Amino acid sequence: MNRHGLNIPPALLLILLWIANGASQASAQSARREQMEIYLHYACRETYRSIQHQGDNIDFLNYLDYKTDTGCTGVVHVGFSLSPSEKWVFSADLGMMSDMRFSQMNISASRIIGKTGSNAAWGLSAGISAYPVYLNEFNEYHLLRDTGLIADLNVNYRQQILYDPGLELIPFLNYKKNKLSLKAGTGLRISTFLPFNQLIMQKKEGGNFRREIRYETLFKPALSSVSALHATLMLTDKPGLSVGLQASAQVLFGMRTIPYKRSILTWTADNRVTDEIKPGSKPFTVTEVSAGIVFRF
Image 1 (cartoon, one colour):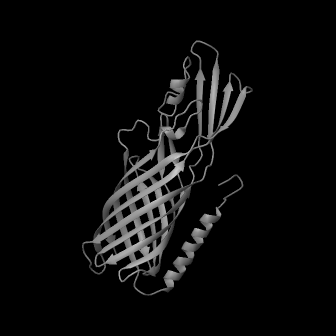
Image 2 (image 1 turned 135 degrees about the horizontal axis):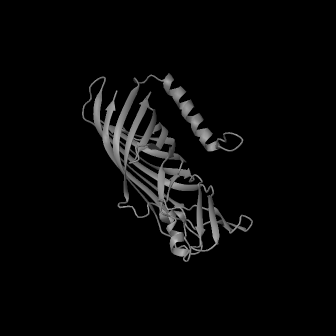
Image 3 (image 1 turned 135 degrees about the vertical axis):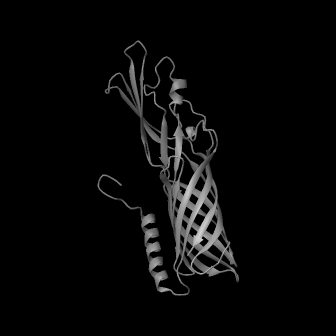
């Protein structure tokens, strides 16, 4: 969204048109009746980014999940999928963490393109996904560096929620036999951290010195690899309603950074110094493993 209205990226528009076209084609096919699934998963997600030495410039990603007790974040997933034919599957998934808000989203469409055996096939999946990461206590950079000052007048706990929406395109292999189905794929994801602003206000105790440091982060699209594995084992196979177990694993890997514009105002707003800073890109991974129950109609 810009100030003049909604600006839809061409890649997103193509994916939405592909999904809409697939839905219209699938509704016209009658190889078998529609199949719906509702599932509930519990996941363990771990986000990691290599620490980078920082001198005169802060690197916000150094404070990714900073000082957390464990690298594993619990996520509850609620999802729905619709398969109007043997070739198409449309799915939507929402994830909720300990803050009890749905803050993770995945919408995708998968199409079987060809057979590779009696029980195996290959296809292509396209989707839109977004998930949050947390930057904790990034003001510690100034608390340690700006000695002789009250380095941050904001005494509240500093935390920034950082969202990473992206587009995914994943070729996959699919295997089905009896009550077992497996799906595995590796593809690409293009994403960017949504910009945010932060203000650090400083003063000299017992003196008139004042300073404001304003951070405005910038868009930086990044290309990552995404690999996923999904398994389903149906425990019952009765007409109308079936119950099964599911397990999934996904790994994202890319080189990520957060560039930003920094403005330093000393004493008055007229004394402004502005720099645009781009910390080096470092390996960034998101790993998630989940398991749960599925109901098939």
